[in-house]
Length: 95
Image 1: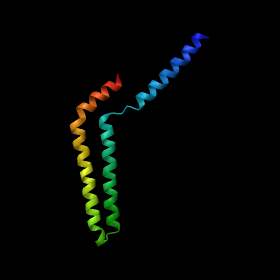
Image 2: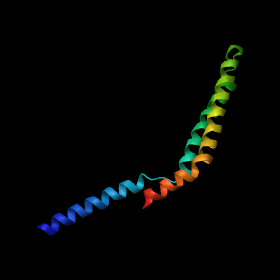
Image 3: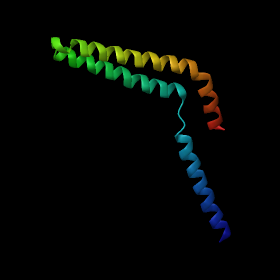
Image 4: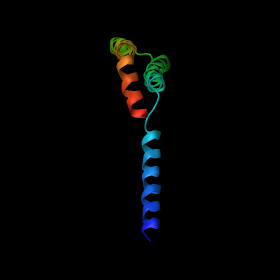
C-alpha cells in the first residue's frame, strides 16, 4: 500500500514538473511573439485607414502609428538590453 501511495505521489510530481517545464519558453520565441503581435496591430491599423481614409482621422492615425512604432522600438531595445539577464533567469528555470 505504501509503495502504491509513493508511486502515485511520484507520478503527480512528475506531471507537475512536466507542466512547469511547458511553461518555460525560449526568450527569443517570446520576443518574436510579442513583436508579431505589435506588427500585426500596426498592419491592421494601416489597412483600416487605407480602406476608409478620412481627412479628419489623419492626425489620429499618425499619432497611433507613431505610438505603435515606439512600442516596437521599445520592445526591441528592451530585449537587447535585458537579454543576458533573462537568459540567466531562463537557465535557472531549466535547472
